[in-house]
Each structure stands twice: as C-alpha cells, then as structure tokens.
Image (cartoon, rainbow, N blue to C red; front, side):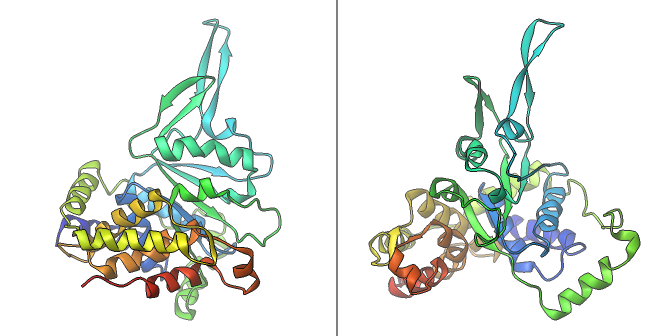
Length: 317
C-alpha cells in the first residue's frame, strides 16, 4: 500500500462514521485536496453537503473556518478589513475567515456576485489584497464550497471565471435506501438535533508529513506523452464542439492532468491510463463548459456533452 492508498484508507474510515454511502464523493474530494484544488459541491438542500465538507475538514487539518452565503454578505466579511486602533493610532488588520487552511463557503451562490468575486484572487494566487496591501494565505489554503441548483430561488449563478477556479464540481444526489435508513437511525434521536450528538472524526489525523508523502507519491506517477496528447485532444474537442460556446481552459486541462495523476496513485498504479483521465473528467470538465442556446433548447447539459466528448476523442493505445 503506497502513501496515497494509506491516506485514503484513513479518510474513508474517519468520514464513514458521519457520512454514509459517499465513498465516491470522498474519493473525489481527496483527489482535489491532494492536487491542491478547490471543490464545489452541488445539490439540493438537506443532502449532507455541509456535513461532508465539515467532516473532511476535521479529518484533514482539525481546524477550518466557515462562511454562510447570504445576499447581504460583503467581501470584507470574507477577506477582512483594516480597523483603526486608538491605542496605537494605526490601522490594524482584522483578518477574515479566508485566512485559514480550509475555508468552507456554505451556499456560495446565495452570496452576491460582488462577494463571490472576493474569492477570485484567494483561490488562484493564495493571497488577498486589502487596501492596496497584499497578504499571503496559508500554503494549504483550500476552498470547499456548496451550492444549490441554479433553478432554486435566491441564487446568483457563479460566473465562468469563478467556476474555472474550482478544480472539481461534484454533484451530491439522493442516497440509496439503505444509506438513508442508516441516516435516520443515526440522527433520528431528538437529543441529537442540536448537533451535539453528531460523531466527529479524528481531529487532525492527517499530518503535514502524511500529506507531503501522498503528494510525493502522486508526483512519481508516470504520465506518458500519449496521455498528454489525449488530454489536449479533449480540451481542443471541447473548444470546437458545435454546441459549446466556451470550452475547456488551459487551467482545466492542467486540473485534469493533476487529478488523473492522483487518481492513478490512489488505485495503486504506477502510470496514468486513459481510464484515469475519464474518471476524473466527469468532475473536472462539465462546470467549465458553457453551452450554446441551441444546446439548451435541446435540453442538453454539460454532463451530456462531457460524455459525448469522451466518446468522440480517440483513446490512445
């Protein structure tokens, strides 16, 4: 068992105590975190998106900050502001919740576009600028955001530039009957409705050394020139597709490569295969595709087109 497999085994065990039947979602989250990417969880309310993100945060670093997206949330509420200190007669920085290793932004698309844009620099450069002064964020800074489907009331669609900064968008669907029954059995007691009875995973079980070893293991996974050509061909096909207005960006192609490398390591592989690329493509590609009006009229969505692209581009031998 390599370092990546050992890390996933620990995380799956930790999260299994609080989140049931989400093995594939946990795998996707772990791939993104190891690859230093940000994650967007999308799904209707009440399916455990926030619990999943909080459980992962506790298992990874033991501490995190949370922001609740609302229409009146302001950029300063996220990045912080300078406040005048009468004692020293100087302006001092009151850092916002963005100064953390893992930032959970709950219902990000209920915040206004102005507030959403406050995360653009932080997600790309891992630094923020406040009153013309630039402050570095922790090296492990990661955003895990949740959002409701766009057709829900009170939501603001995330712009393309914001979506492209998320390495993955993971859809959270309804659990199976058996898993939903386990949820009712575990959380159905009235004494636990305040959250006090919710079991918490081990605090800070994953150390900096563990994560560094996992990333070193991922870096040792070989990527052939044929796989690079395959990823580039997928990106080019998305840009020239008749029903796509905006295709996969270079950032998106790089995200697919990094995610595929981690995915290969998690299965114990020594090199990336086309199947690794295909598996991560469903998380990396769809939210980066902007569809043309005629595609929307045909009730197609970005997931359908991602599947079509994977079928259209020849797989390298």
